[in-house]
Every structure is written in C-alpha cells, then in structure tokens.
Image 1 (tube, rainbow, N blue to C red):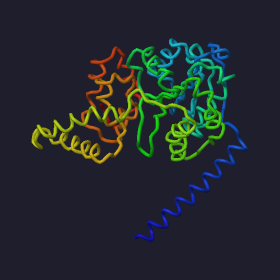
Image 2 (image 1 turned 135 degrees about the horizontal axis):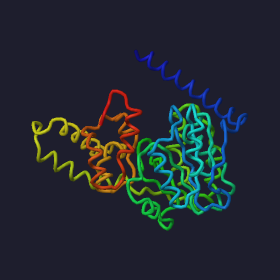
Image 3 (image 1 turned 60 degrees about the vertical axis):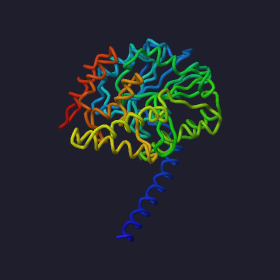
Length: 340
C-alpha cells in the first residue's frame, strides 16, 4: 500500500512537471487564446479607471446579476474590458454588452481567470496612466452595498492593492475575485513582471498556486502594500468569543447539527486551521461586516456543506436593498438536485 501511494505521488509529480514545462513552451509559441474581439460603445483610450471582468457560462449567457454588476461598475466611472472563457458566446450576448463595455474578448478557457485577466490587461493602452485597475469576475453576487462606498473604502493611503477578503490557506493572499490596484501597485516592477511572466496554465492547480495564491506574496516581495477590506484575523477575533459562548451555553440536544458545526469551527479556530471566510462565515460577513458580495459557488454547490444556508435571501433582505431575485433567477437556470 505504501509503495502504491509512493508511486502514485511520483507519477503525479512527474505529470505536473511535464505539464508545467509544456505550459511555458506553449506560452512562448502562442501568446494568447483569444477567439474573437468586439469593440464596445464605451471609450477605453484615456480612461483613468479600468476593470477587467471575466465571465464564464456554459451557454455564454449574460445573466441579469452580471449585467447589474457591470452597470454598477460603469456608474463608478470604470471602462470595462469584458473577457469570457465560455465555450459559446452568442451574438445576443455581444449586443447586450456593447452599451456597457469598451472591449469584449471571447477566449479559450486556458489559464482560467488569470489567463483572461492577462489578456484583458494587454488591451489597456497605458496601464501606468491609470488611477485604478480592478480585476474581478462573475463568481459572486452583488454588489449588495453602495458600490461607491466599497470603492472609497479601498484607500490608497492605507494600501496599494486591495481585496474584499483574504485567505491564509496555502499562504496569505487576497482572494482574486476582486483585486483593486492603485497607481503604486500598477507602477511597481511587480506588476509588469507578474503579468508578463504568467503562463497560460492549463491545470487549475497551477493557476491557484501561481495566480490566486501567488499574486499577493509576489507583490508584497516588491514592497507593495496589500490589504483586505474584511481581514480574516479580524473576523475570527470577533467570532471566537461567540463560538466559545455558544458551546458553553448549549447542549448537544438543543440543536445537534448546529452544535457539531460550531464545534468544528471552534476546533479550527483553536488549532489555527485557516477557513475560507466567504463560505464558513458568509452570514457574519453579510450581517456584521456588510460585505458587498456573496459567493456564487456557496449557493450553487455549498462544497463545505455549510448548514442553514437556506437563510441567505432573508439575511440579504435585512442588510441590503439588492434585488435578491437576480440571484434566484440565476440559480433557477443552473441548480441541479439542490435548492436553498
């Protein structure tokens, strides 16, 4: 059994090395994976705020929740470079996007979000002239709060690179569904080096390692100040006393499902095991922190089996004027054998 595990591990490592080398060679031979490009109605040249927005839908549909987010971005003065990694991208989607965006790139899903971000950034005439660059995607619903306040919260005096949330799984990093670069980050040598040298990885594990997790420590190593609006350490400092109080005050019989879940959370907090706050603490982020987003994967798949997720619409209604029917409509078209 040990020999089998050893051989399996070595085989995986060998395949990873071969794939890594192939990826780098392919990136040299083929610099991008763009299928088609369309111009939108919004001017990109001379823009001071630009967002690269990545999208994925099996049918290439621009859902209403995505359209809402794009309109909020436009209201805040962002010119939008819209990238889509979808297998199909119908003309109907193109026509819906044109009034909202500057550029539409339909590309092969090579490199996942980070391949799309790389291609989108390459469309910007002069990134160093920007006051603000945002990279984001359709992996969350929102914004649930006043988006102007969200942008203003990303104060360039406090940090050069902002995320909504951070994560300590693997190593400390800002979660890449929302990364806002101020001029100090854009003009840092880290910016050109990171995006210029980033290969179009075909395997998701490499994208996570060198993109999602790798970006923040890379920028930190160049002296770029990185900060989350909702830091994990601040969240667990506030939650830990509540967890301890709950466990001390309740018995197993009161609500066994909730108690087992809280016990698991408590053990992770005591042992320093990092948790993904957008899943495990989604409700605290919404109610206590007024977080502007809720993760789509949480409601679609609930991969960590978080209990009582059915309360999501009620909680959003308590803290936000966001039309939660936009979420319901999307879930109705994508959910299979699950409902919240």
